[in-house]
Length: 381
Image 1 (cartoon, rainbow, N blue to C red):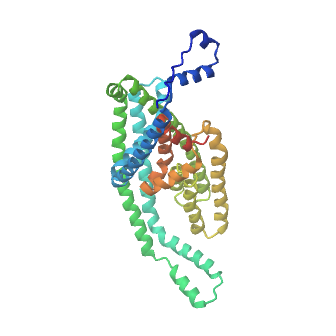
Image 2 (image 1 turned 30 degrees about the vertical axis):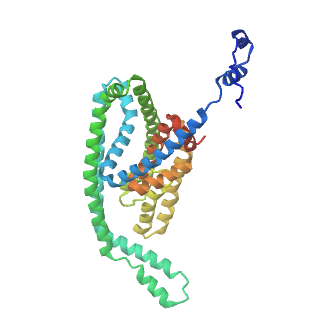
Image 3 (image 1 turned 45 degrees about the vertical axis):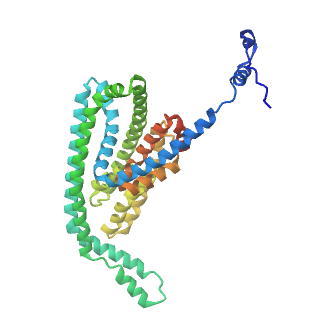
């Protein structure tokens, strides 16, 4: 038994003029017969998700294994985005693009060298003061421990012996810090070399993309790159300004109370402020502890701690939201997860780069039809 053959539906042009757009599309769909577009899109998305999981595993392995080479490259990209607002301003002032890049690079190199020399001098200056810091810190801990109520006096004595801080341990920690500084010098040199090559590539890269991918696909890739450039440049410019304000105001407070190494703590607060939510308060911990250890008068530490915390709260909750203007449109939960992931992979450097990398991934996913739903989940709409 055979089913009767369905006659095709013919829509007369005069009838199509009397139909609404919805009725016309429904009639056309009936005329074309059943469709499997939805099913094919679902299969494509499943396939893309599977490929993404495999790619994520490969990328994670490469990030961990080649961190020595990739960390300076990503930091150079970060610095490249940081240079863009300054570069655009210099070009608007009439300076040629290459000269503007040269001025920014030499200025950044001079600042980096100055900071490095100052940090090294502070490290060497701190070495003779370590025994005094050790004595004061141990005295504070013992005073607090003596106020604890122990049922067993032997347990209290054991606890007091365990918290004893040996000067050899502090000296070893100082030597380790100096060793890390020497490693940082070579790491910074490699980052600077990457930055020079990235600036050189920026001139010819757009034309090569158009030649390699074609005019249409090349323009699409350049559009994605420009979107990433604008979003991250804005984020970094705002973050740099508010971090500089936090570091400068914290330095003024610490210098007014004559806390040792006030400039070093100001720079540390500036750098760690790039880590959202957590970095600024981690940076405050060391100078606040030092303010209690350095001075015999406890009121100095009790005055410094609320001042530094108040500066961070005022900048983070009042100043930064007003300056930021356009939001990053990224979920705060995803920012915390990104911080945890990149800190696990690359430590402090990864935590600083976490938000720019998350924003880059979101913009790329938003421009691919198959991954657009993932970008929507990442957003904070």
